[in-house]
Amino acid sequence: MSKSTFIYQKRAHRAPNTLLIESLHYTKKRGSCLDLGSGALYDAKYLLAEGFQKVLSIDHTTTWVQRAKKLASENFQFQNIAVQDYHFPKRQFDFVSAQFILPFLGPENFQPTWKNIYASLKKGGIFSGQLFGNRDGWNTKDTQMTFFSKRALKKLFEGYEVLQCYELEQDGIEAIGNKQHWHVFNFILKKL
Image 1 (cartoon, helix red, strand yellow):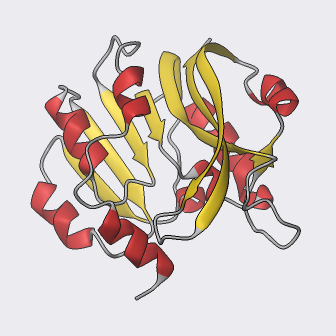
Image 2: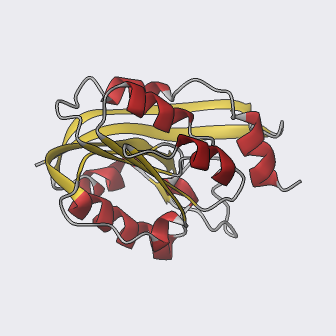
């Protein structure tokens, strides 16, 4: 069993992400929503239950394709594709959720994906997710992930009103049981 499959199975019965729930307090329009890195689809189910007219979930793993087929309806779509390979439509979404997916994009894929997310949001649309800080334990010279300093976020967040951005730094455990030093920025942004 691969590390990613193990993590997906471990998280399969979790409640919706807390930041996602907080984000919906700012989301006035419940038209279309993009759920990036949807994994086990627990966030997608929550978004549908919260009244979004259309939820599109994107994930590259094949682990949850069958579950996605069971959810398929006029209100829900699933694309089995890597986030960076998705063709983002312009000004389409009222809400974009990227819960714990963006840091796993390498630097060559992060910037184009970040720009595509911005372009896909309607004016006033809400975007929430996480970025890993530069003191995160996974930030090593051989990593293929993306990390940010607090200072770098200011430039990254240009074009958005920052509704929330809070930093967490603590020692903990990874989903597979290894010790880990976490440095995470949780954000909720509104497109200007």
